[in-house]
Amino acid sequence: MLKTTAKLTPRGNSLAVTLPKEVVEAAGLRQGDALSLLARDDGVIEIRHAAPAEAELEAAFEWSLGRYPETYRDLAK
Image (cartoon, rainbow, N blue to C red; front, side, top):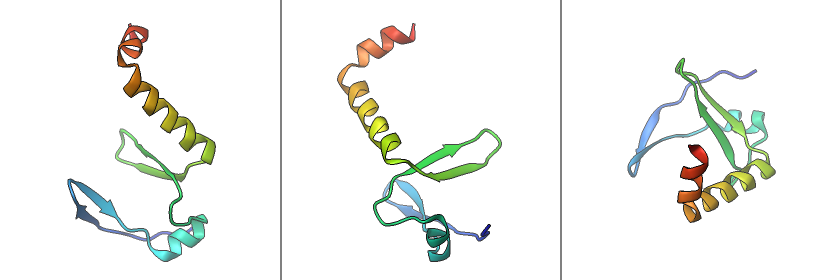
């Protein structure tokens, strides 16, 4: 297990965190990899290496949500 700290920095209208090289290597990440982010109610933020299938599924869902918003609203009732 590797523990370190990082600071949030402004990036456009968002905030960014830079992952230290040691963290990137320990997690087996590469530039362009998809990450899954989860902000929990207790303030913990989980960052995980997203499986390619998970990233593709999320992209397909976002596309369909944009294309068929009324259908999703009807399904949510």
